[in-house]
Image (cartoon, rainbow, N blue to C red):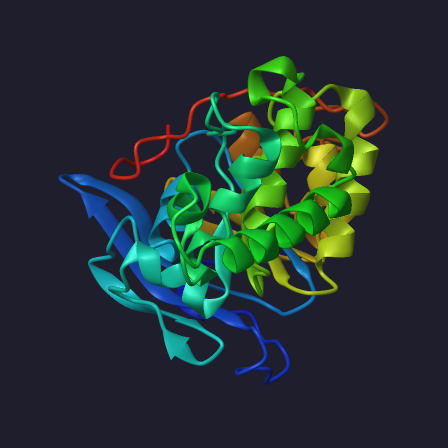
Length: 301
């Protein structure tokens, strides 16, 4: 299972056209820094694919490539049989791709419901701002957007917050609102950038259940530092280190891989060590929350 990106994408059933994401030999350089080095992986429909690695491994850069914010120097991206390489970010929603950020990115002066409605704007005929301003022919569109926004909030168990302002909510609830904003687009590929960032330990099991439920409609790709969450929800995990893919496999395979342990600890693996640096029978170490999304044009730190 030890390997590198030269081995090509992991073998999965032939489900192209059914929501399969394929990343093939993607390389990204920022000046003299190689952020991604010929990375290949796949994310299968109706499964959770985790992307992990130490700080600076290239995780956020990979998400930015998938979203069109960063163009690779080489390699190819395909989703559902459609090429993504060079695609403009605003085209993602029409292909069924949505992303959350490391932070929440909510508009403080709009209600929770209005924030979620923003996520459905690309699919609205009149558009959110026309509806908000009460322009002609917007009433029907506004009702449809509101119904979909309420359904998305219901899905993340936050429908009772619809009329609140984001700044009135604790961080964990704002994260749910941000997720609902992505779900209103009804994505078939959902990219989650550190969904557990800033959440207390007791909220992780509920977040894990929610992520698992999302696979009923979408392929889910999760970049996350909280290893207890990653190991509990992911069907497969890709491990990056200094831009290279060093391991790809099931949670059990990745957790037992000496190369992964060495990447996290910076030392030769010892018996009982886990990729998160904690003893096998100990509690994983929590990462400090990151409330701001990174610059899309820069490698992650």
